[in-house]
Image 1 (cartoon, rainbow, N blue to C red):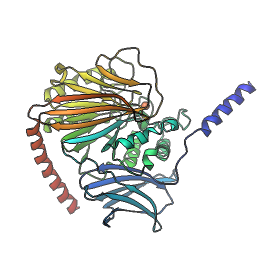
Image 2: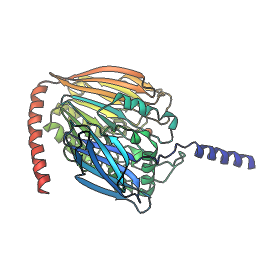
Image 3: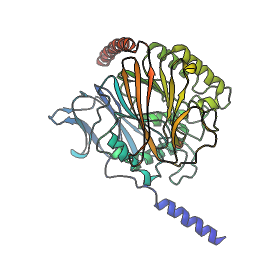
Length: 451
Ligand SMILES: [Fe+2]
C-alpha cells in the first residue's frame, strides 16, 4: 500500500514538473478584429502593472487607442486590457506597450485581408496547454503566414486542471485556465501578430458535453468575450447569438455559431437555438455570397458517437439542411473537436449545390486511433497527428475556389485538395453586396462620430 502511495506521489510530482512554463518575460497579446480601418487587441497583464499603449509606423506616425476597456476579477492577479485603434491597413504598424514610460513589449501588427476576392485563413481547434512537446506547430503556422487564424473551440481546456485532472468549471476556474493557456501557448508571444477570430466548444464553455443548462453560461461568455478581441470594433464583426457573430471579409461571409449556449440535452430538441437558427437563415437570404459556417463540433457526424449537429439533434439538423437548401446561398461548413481532420463532400441533391465540411483538429491535444465506422462523406483525412488547416479562398468568375492544405507540426503537408463551388451570377451578387456594405460603413462612421 505504502509503495503504491509513493508511486502515485512521484507520478504526480513528475507530471507537475513537466508542465510547460508560463512566460512572464513578455505580455500575452492577441490581435482580434482587423479591418481596413480598425484593429483590436486583448492583452493579458498582471493587475499591478500600470500600462500605456500606442501604435507606431516606421514613418513616425503615432496613434493612441480610440477605446480602452479593462476587465479583471477580484480572485485573479491578472487582468485584460482591451484596445481599439483606428489606422490605415496599408501602413505597417507596431504595437508598443509602456510601463512607467519605458517600452516593455513591441509587436508587428497583422494586416488582415488585403484583397477583396482572396481570403487566406488557418483553421484550428483543441489547444491543450499541457502539450509543450508539440508547441513547435505554432512556428509552422507562423511560417505559413495566414491573414486570419480561426479558433473553432476547445481553445482552452477549462474543465481540467493543469495536470489533466477534472476541475469544476466555476467562473474563477474558467478564468484561471484561460490565463494559463494565454501564458503558455507561444502564439501569444510571437513577434508578428496574426488576427484571431474564435468560437467555443464544450471544453472552453464549461463541463464536458455541456449545453443550455450550464449554470455559469453567462459568466463563461463574459470571460470568452474578455479574452478574445471581437467586441469593440463593429466594422467587420457583427455580434450574433451567444459568442457567435458574422464576420464580413471582402467577398466572403463567415458565420460563427455558438453551438453550446442553446443546446438542449434531449435528442428531439435544438442544437443552436431557435433565435440563432433564424438569425443565420435571414442573413444567408440577404447576402448571397460565399458563406463559411463555423462551429465547434461537427455538423455532419450522425454515423459516430461523438458530438455533432446531425448525431445529437437529428430532427433539428434536417430542418437546418432543408432551410439552407431553400435559400441556395453557397455554404461550406468548418468544425473542430474531433481530434482528427477531414474533408467531407456532399452531393448536389443535399443543398442544391456541391458543398463540403472541413474539420480541423487538434492543434495539440490527445490523438486517437481512427474510428472503426467509416464516414460515408469523407474525401480525405488525417488522424493520429497534431495539425491545422490552411484554406485559400478565391471568388473568381462564377466559382468559389478553395485550396485546402492540412499541415503537420513540422510544417509538412498531410493532405491537399482543390475544391470548387459553382455559383450562378456570383459577380452580380458580389457587386450588390459591395454596394450595400459601403452604405453600412458610412452609417457606422457617422454613428461613431455622434457617440
Ligand atoms: Fe478537444
